[in-house]
Image (cartoon, rainbow, N blue to C red; front, side):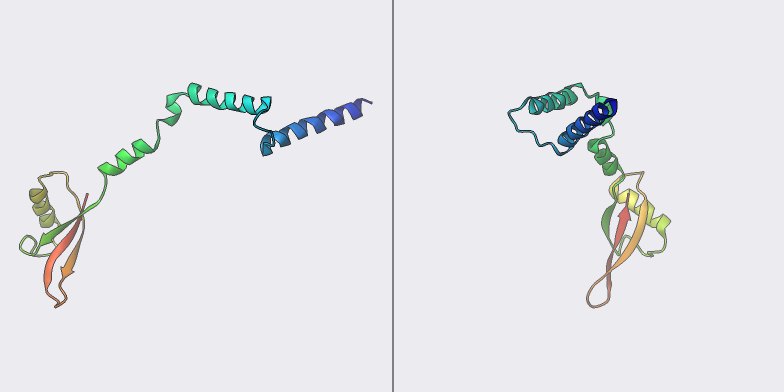
Length: 122
C-alpha cells in the first residue's frame, strides 16, 4: 500500500513538472497569474550588479580600441615600409599622440601609379 501511494505521488509530481516545463495552462488560471507574479518579482528584485557586464560596457570598450583607416597621399609617405616615420606623420596629422599604425596598404590607380596609402590606425 505504501509503494502504491509513493508511486502516485511521484506520478503527480512528474505531471506537475511536465505541465510547468511545457506550460499548457490557460491565461485565466491561477498558475498563469503565479507565473506573472514570479516574472515581476524577478524584474523588480534582481540586483543591478548581475547586469554590470552588459552590452553597453562592451560597446564602450569597443569604441576605445576601434580600428580606423586613414587615406594619406604620396607626398606624406615616401616609403611604405618605414612604419616608425609613418606613425610620426600620422600622429602629426591626427593630433593624437596615442595613435598606433597597424598596417599600410598601397592605393594604386587603374594606370598603375601609386595615388596614396591606406593606413590602419588605432
